[in-house]
Length: 230
Ligand SMILES: [Zn+2]
Ligand SMILES: [Zn+2]
Image 1 (tube, protein in one colour):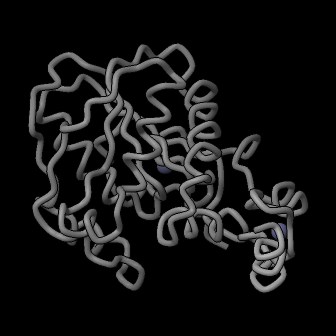
Image 2: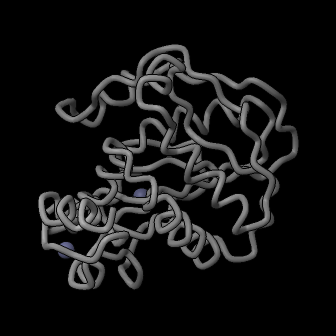
């Protein structure tokens, strides 16, 4: 058995998700990549949209959420790791992201008394195909770390989230209009909304709108990654 295992290891060495370096079995990221993850802490960012001050999106749109935070920028290694988690079943990164996101919440939303954690839903068909909803995986762990109840069925989704890459800022908001709806009352609750990546904020905004419609007092958002324009 040992021989077969050694043979397979030689044939399919375990590689770092960030840089393809060969690393010990069971690891996912090498130390160099871990050190290189682009963190958002200490940057001067807008309290509402979470972007760097000079890239603030609030000039173009009045968001329905109170504030967004994220531990990492959507670039380089952070981006590769998130894509591995999101598309290639690297679920071992869920814990890593959740811990970092929970820390961002504790730091940036210090003193906010949350009483519900919710997440951006996926169309059931897509979730079945992928096997999991990455936002749920993050939210469930964040709920445990922060000791705030997870409300699993808070939001519904009635259309496929369109691929947003190539559309401009304004178009992204039109694309998600009416996609999310509230399933239950969140009257008087202060909600933490969880998603994987924030780009324009259109998805978070549409979800926040639905959560406010459900009676939520305020909606704060946390994502794993946040866009940073060059
Ligand atoms: Zn690496
Ligand atoms: Zn802003």
